[in-house]
Length: 473
Ligand code: IFM
Image 1 (tube, protein in one colour):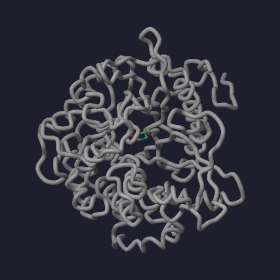
Image 2 (spheres, helix red, strand yellow; image 1 turned 90 degrees about the horizontal axis):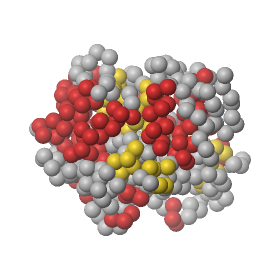
Image 3 (cartoon, helix red, strand yellow; image 1 turned 180 degrees about the vertical axis):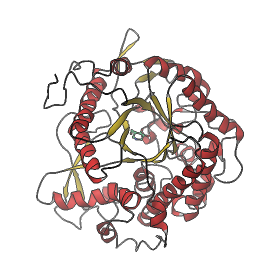
């Protein structure tokens, strides 16, 4: 018997034996060791060392020191009962300049990581690109340069050849929206550029890189049941007035359909091309590109944290000056409305209904494509008492989002698993270490690891396959 709480705190929910429970991190956010074993420089090294870019002047130089503590971290994963671990590979550890010869020491690290996971019965899920582009490639134009897509294909082929016999699942890109629009339009992520043409060009080259990489991985990955995918961070959009339909359409085009269009339908949405016609004619899309991008996938990686309410500004011409470098080229007349209600420490509202709606909508649009939640989680200021990390708000957030996933499954969405972001507290990009998403607390001075109450809660969920209890509010 289950109860259906309007606030998504259902009790008694069970997950089937084949539902995959895991957690995720990304290379630059946890590894540290940025100058070791031949690793080249990435755009995030450059960006984080540029004064004023990162809160508190933090960098990923040391981060969680995971590079050196990997065995300890693997043991922790096993103790928590994780069934899958999604990590990303730092491209500059493999090809320090983004092209040519493989750096064996860097490859060795990921090979040992994969072996360590397999030895503990944990499925390795590898992301090829979680934003750490080799700096040399950025110096040659980064994602605005078509050649970067071909360099990425070469790197994908190298990784497929090296780890394809052991990696269970691959995702090509993590959140290409962030790479293109936060990196090249808003300038708040590396490489910190504010150029709308560059951002839209980057969208296409990231899409092309994805398609080329899928072809390479299909050829190289020798594990017969290895699954290939991409991870997208979908915007779930709500309306507030009569202008919202237009606002939702515009943001949906830039955030979601700019990627699902070419990757999963084989075409850019016409309205996206029209909304951005004042910026570019999209002539960087060449004959044959869309066929190359439109590759069959084995599942779709879904990242979800929050929903947003949008409407058109009263004066369409008048995007405020602070929005001049927003990540929405061509659609800056859309306003994101501040909704009242509970928020995480990122300032993001808590909307488990958005996850249910998203999963059901994706299942309707792509009925044959399984879904994997590749990231969901929350940043809160943890409370430490007597050495225990009491993070009841994170447990509550997760309880409600697992409920949402369960409800989506009950409505027919083929949601195959759920990876909590993040396994460890880590370097949260422009927020540095000020935001904590981990199931495991990191003392950034001593590097001591402490499993939080949420980590214990998650372990119980995995062991029993049943949502443990409604968290205390
Ligand atoms: O930390 C990030 C991650 O790198 C990408 N997805 C969102 C997370 C939280 O902001």
